[in-house]
Length: 188
Image 1 (cartoon, rainbow, N blue to C red):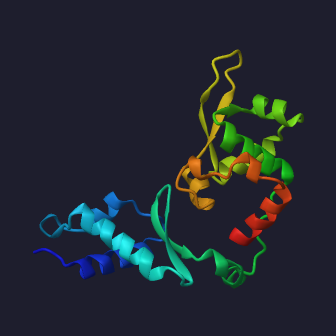
Image 2 (image 1 turned 180 degrees about the vertical axis):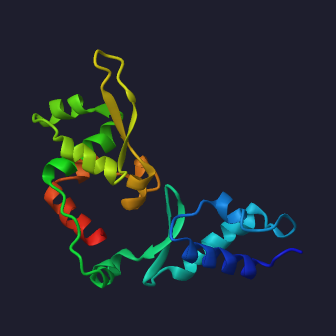
């Protein structure tokens, strides 16, 4: 039994809403029994149709590093965020500088971050970034002491609505880390 395009699209839409997390195309394909499995092109077409249908609405279909997900459209995020009463976490300038250095210079060691910033990196900063799962240890530098090298994670990409690191703004675009901190408060 083969399914028509409209049915495939409705199944994909329902799965993406219900999943609560991004889903890769392969995972979406796994929803179908072997005898009813649509071709990959049909799934891609369903995704493209949904993107078009949700364009200009309060919800959008977005592809991030972990797959496809529905999320609040950025222009209405300010109002939707008022649903949650708790105040979003504020991030210090030092934490944001450290995260930016890891994102742009990965893999990078704590010592290299300290050398660039000119001050020591608090263990609280690395602990916070590791707990948020925005960074991870990707290896150890082959020098005495074998310091840990840090890199960003899929969670980092997902949180900042990036598909890959190439989508990071160029360093020339980043002028003021305090403005980024204000933007982060809106995202949460």
